[in-house]
Image 1 (spheres, one colour):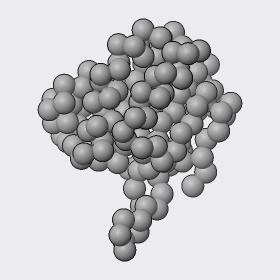
Image 2 (cartoon, rainbow, N blue to C red):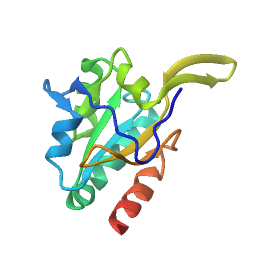
Image 3 (cartoon, rainbow, N blue to C red):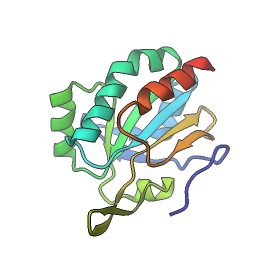
Image 4 (tube, one colour):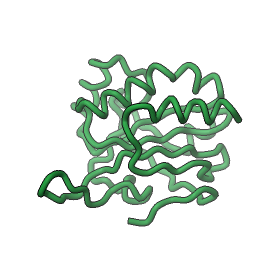
Length: 158
């Protein structure tokens, strides 16, 4: 799995969202002052993914105030994303990457081992994409707990 590095150009994407619309990285970039936070998560409604999504929800005002948009991406079907967004009162886009093509281009799709099983899945990862489309920050295999606060602190510090 090839991973993105700072200064790489982020792959553009357009995906369907839980809100019944489409979200494009290029449109989000154009509409933000400083860039876009794109985070990939394995499975809507699971403990770690709920923790991470709620952390983004709870820090959304500070992130938007600093000029960043947020979008979450998973391979879940739209129906699961709709339920997840409603259950957790998520107000940022959740995008469905059913064929994991976008996850592959970001280097977040690949083998994961759980116990004695190995299978392909989304690796919990977060990217900050500058307004010009370059990668500012690429974090792979992040922890669900505490990672958003550290990201917020880094982005708000400059």
